[in-house]
Amino acid sequence: MKHSKQLWNELVRELVASSLLAASIVLLWRDNLLLFIVVLVEGLAALDLWHDRYDLGFFLVVAMLGSLAEAVFVHFGVWRYANPTLLGVPLWFPLAFGTSGLIGERLVRTITKMWEEASSSDASSRLLSSKGAFGSMR
Image 1 (tube, rainbow, N blue to C red):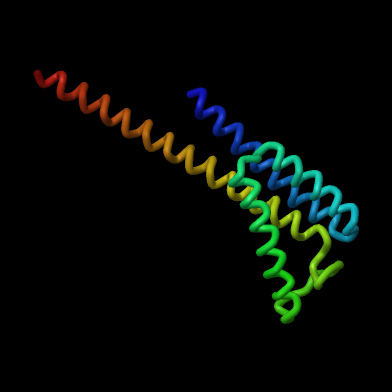
Image 2: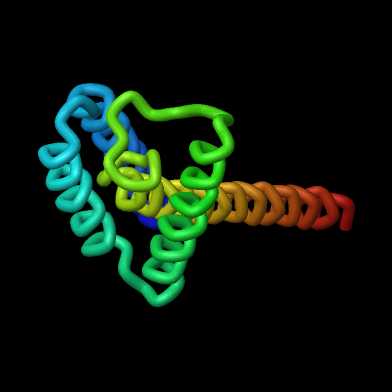
């Protein structure tokens, strides 16, 4: 039960971090420098919470590949940003993309653990009930 509570707390933490990042972008997108600073702080806070080697690698790869893809899309006219700074992409974008990827990766980890815990709990319950049924047959 304690393990379940920890997973629920982690899920809430991840959803709050995601919501905060989205709200920051929605509210501050007109000011690239301010949003860059806010997203930098949010990204550093996320990396402080979740900082194993996989997390850092995931953050960096998603930030770099996502930004590269965005620059290509903007260059070829797939879409454009209202407030671009470099290569048609806002200054804050790589940090926001990396942070979003990190939070998403952590959400997947937490949901997977919750799923596994629920599955093992169901299996244990079935095993106990089947032992009880066989025990009563003797």
